[in-house]
Image 1: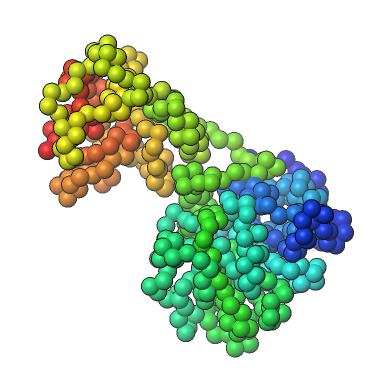
Image 2 (image 1 turned 90 degrees about the horizontal axis):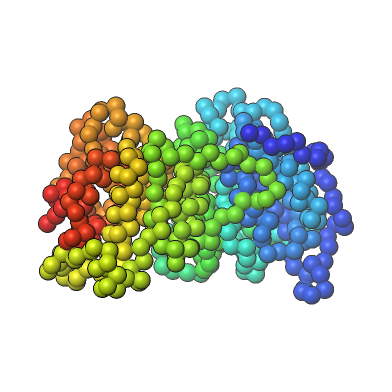
Length: 511
């Protein structure tokens, strides 16, 4: 789907209102900042990126937008144009620099392949943005890649308050990847250091001097030596790799400019780059996982309301039903879970979980439940809790519905599951392989805690499956109709124990 044509914008500097406007009489005038937006094939992340920029707590009268896009095979240019037409009038100035053709570089192997020509063109664009910011009279320029989502709306204020020449907000990702280096070799390559992980994991907090920041960072145009900073051409003595982030790191070093990364706050998220041989679909899948991680860790990403997005088409992935067991008194978890499924385009049916807090002895007896005499948790030694009774009854109601409706196969999720990257694609592939191998199955764990993984054996012909050993948790599983019949036939309500202890007994794997 492509966005409807937006109102035409001049492909040059479009000044909107006075050159610089005061933020208002209620607060001191804040420094003027240029937001540099350089977008290529960013349709998957651009709505959330632009939504985050909209929500920055900073007067738009003190902000200018410098936007460039090029070499796109997706809807990036139309999205940006639509957004600028809607919000551009709120900013002090806008530069719009689109290039519709060509759609690729001559020597690139794919849209994620970085050729020398691509690096050079990006450096030239960044230099143009820097030159504009200086000429416009800005105090700062903020570079932020279009898959870097600043969920903390105070980010720009917090960075400006540091008063540092070059400073980056440390961004979180799906891995240990972030937007700074703690070490660099004399040849300009990445060097491992003892400081990186304590910084990335926020075991030490503050603003730390580093040799390089990239992807999202703020540059002070008033700092001593800032006039010598450049992205292109590289410094006359430059011999390091021809890469925009390394060229800028060298320029800072040569100009005597200190570079810092700050991690006191959670500023936002960045997508882990895909490999050069991968494509835009791989990047889109990665970004969906980043959205899901933000839903768990918070704050969540919010897409711009001023950008047309491709419609979601949720499905049940070939299952007859997708059940989501969720406590009504935990609307936060339910909302997060349903949002996660929506982002992955999975259609789910909410099952109101039985709340253990509402259970007492008489209610439990009225439900026909008898606790297994003498049951004790194999590790803690405690007896069955009311929460565990409620959890079991919740799963039991799903098994009953599977049998009553004759559902051949279903998915069952609890509402505290945390999804791995490409969950939907991997599950669809797994089920296709199971069908191709004609493997008979009753239950497939999708989310569990392995107790003795070294004792589990692989299923022949299915590298993604093992014969499950003793496991904790019932976060997610696939269940067949025959499996549901077997679970009910054991009449578990008459000798109830926790559901994640009951299932291993059913496949003879309880210690």
